[in-house]
Image (cartoon, rainbow, N blue to C red; front, side, top):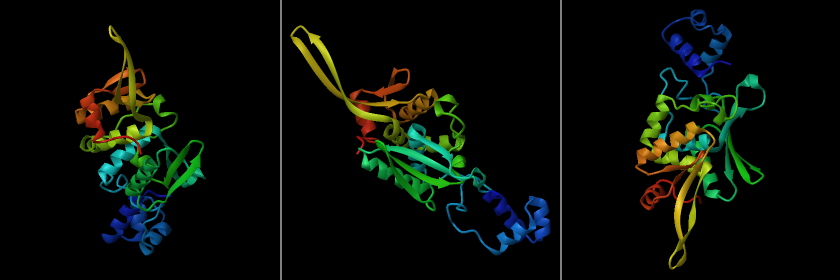
Length: 256
């Protein structure tokens, strides 16, 4: 199975006037395969659909805001795994979405469809959550943070093109992180005063993740939004100041 970039290069050489044999020699692809490529143009499908990272001139996925949101979902509570026979090199991007947030499930579906419009999105009911997934050969290209083992056991570093997207759409990125591995709730604080016991309530956001790298990425995006935050545990950060919560509500808001 050849990468789409190899196919595109072979067709470009043919279009420049080279013969099938010379194109085969330059690309290392068999003449039979090149002959088939010339006579049978590729169709947009889950197997042959174009990938922005595989193009001869790689570019960022679009729409960028949908990618930023999907990146947040993936880093928060997603994974990429093999599908079927490994020789076919087909991968599934899976995002776990809690049953009690049907709007989150729909937004996840829409983000997957926006980034890979030729791929089918499936929703599978599991215990307590829905597995929203889509198959493609290109998920590891679109999310190069994929690797063996758990995310918190390996370095999670964004590629330059991913950083550009997150810098342009930090709100969408944080929205994906909070929707996957965070929550917005009410904190109740008990205070003993001379006049008696008083209870105070205020809303706050939490984002919890075992990866220090992912926590740092969340903090960096919050900084870009001008949202004050702090670590309240080794593996958790919070946004609790009233003005910071109000600002983050503009980008995230309660799950729905």
